[in-house]
Image 1: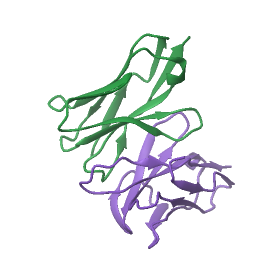
Image 2: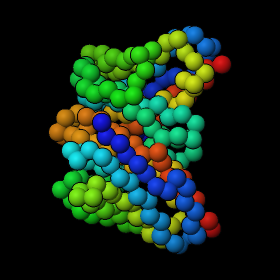
Image 3: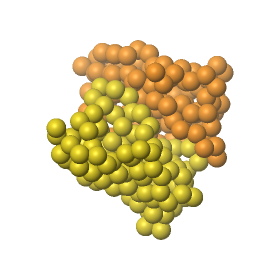
Image 4: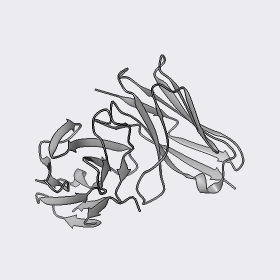
Length: 115
Length: 111
């Protein structure tokens, strides 16, 4: 167990809907990263938060947004869902986020299926 | 931005043989290079990493090499075992502000 908790584990929803994925980082970790992994594909970096502030942004669609709350948990909001958004969404956390040598620990992922 | 390329996409070896997976990166500022192993249906797990001030690092049967000049790094697995079968991802990061992953290598170790 990495200590990173993601909920829900599975989510099935219809096109056009909006969903929220939740991530609780390891105790003491300040950085949260979100990744999208489509079927048989690699990990696409979406966005990173560090201590409540957006630190880095990757290939995140405008329909997607995220935030990190004062208790350091993070939520990834996906709206106007399309079939192509079906994927495994991973959250990872690390202690640092800028200049600190720490590894990122991954959660178990949320499998989103858009029908 | 950073671009990480990983080869091969699939690799099949006989048990006991060595496996080598290679990655190249584009941003010379990247200074941290982790490797993750992802078993089917599970989360990626860090197996080894290397920082830009180190050329090689070993951990039992696993080793990673880094060539900063050429901007490439490689994962070496010796004496492969069936339980090594998984998808391996390389990644490059600058000060942990982003992690750019390669497309993954599916390793199959045949008993």
